Image (cartoon, rainbow, N blue to C red; front, side, top):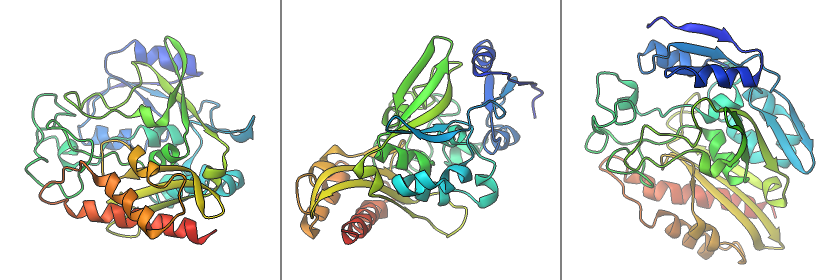
Length: 327
């Protein structure tokens, strides 16, 4: 491993200033992601700034919004009674993530910033446009079972691995940040970037900018939400396909709907057309099927992941059936 400097930040402003001052600097909190990437040689920062001890771990409901600190542990948030009652999809997504040991260590901010699990990205012996811009994307013609069918490009078809990001997208969360230029709020749906021709630019964060927390508005749809994760095994596995749905009803009619999908795109995927197919209509089998067709319109599956086109529609139908059955 390349030698590096280590600093434990005394506050968010100090942390952002330190990372902004060095070309190859990184934040660390729980350490469940960065340390693995450093050991594998994928990342080699010359400065690591520890933000795990900063006072950003609160979870509270105030002003009609749920506030989650960036250094709150995943398990703590999953078990919080307000999260379980008013934002069930968020709790379910967290509990479907990793293992209990990792959830008790990993942080909310770190989870949102984790890197793709694409094997080519994590194998330093392989070319990868995310790791080495311009070197190519071997997944396009190689092993691509776990890769994107939506939102990819000729430069990258890796998928984003976070369960939490999918659930937070479905409940209209905001990411709160602090950087050298001050504070910002970013819609979770806008935090992660599509690869286009610059797949090495993965998020909308600027140099030195750190996530300080997440805000989620209280809403009837968030309270009636659900997360489903389909994976190859039941423990400590990343999603092949996942669905987060948040719906509000008047009787059987859907008055509000938010859908987000994981395992199918380089970022948590929203489909306005699929949502429009449900909004203002009873949650019938025909409406659900129409939403599924709209979702995969324009999909570009590869040799090994064509099954996802059907699987994600089935997963959506299962989630919506469960929510409709609760009525």
